[in-house]
Length: 190
Image (cartoon, rainbow, N blue to C red):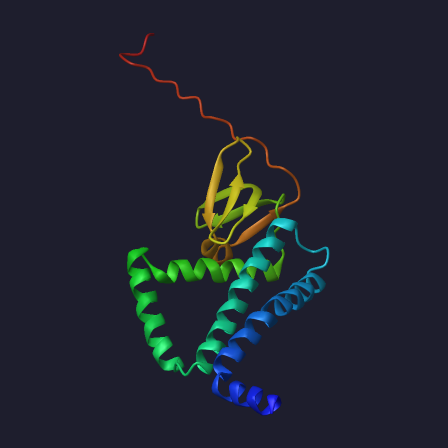
């Protein structure tokens, strides 16, 4: 009789059981994705970028598991998409331009996969007739921090870093010379 009661309880509370199983399986899925990530990037990426990629994978995995649990609870994905898109639109308006934020995050993923520029490399970013050069100090989710030879720090958005031509320099550039301006006030002496 106990087995029948357990089966009846399971049949009436399957949503709760599926939620508990999803919560218990989530750490296992995190370990599996972490091992796959470590295998894919073994020795190719510095620790800082690896930690950021792990965080991004955790967020994506949590979102997918949450969506699956909500589907089991009977919430339609259409309703979630409408709610999510409305919230995202309000967030985009509140944070200036949503395309800029998304393009910076997408550019971070491209830079992470491409792996041509790493922390410590000297680069020159060419923007028309101008250029910015420096050593890559940090590659974040939204921007790249360059340390100029003169000691200045330049914070450059990821989407521009990916779309502009970037020259990886073989050696450290020479410091810029400050122009000497000679001003003569008054008439010239002869």
